[in-house]
Length: 88
Image 1: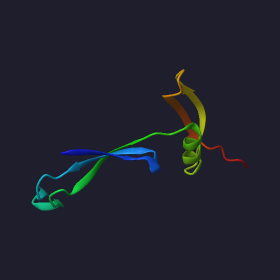
Image 2: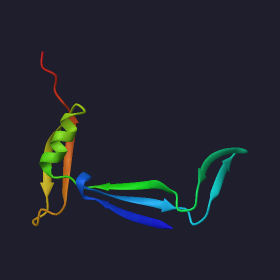
Image 3: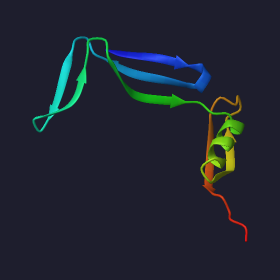
Image 4: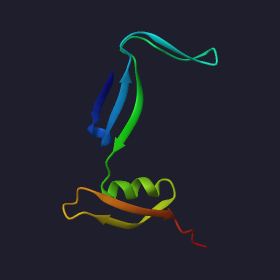
């Protein structure tokens, strides 16, 4: 079973796979994963960004936003980023 969890404080949605019963997943004879009933695994994260929040995130990892194009309603956008220019 899948469960979608809104995480508004992180501006994202998380999709988790939830075990209907206890299970063990084996790969090559070794236990790769054990889950109890109702245990879950994070499967995907859908993030939403504003231009400002994206710029702050990119700056933290040495990238800069060089172009931002949005639709007329400002619901969707495409951003282009590049490594920050080093001065000196």
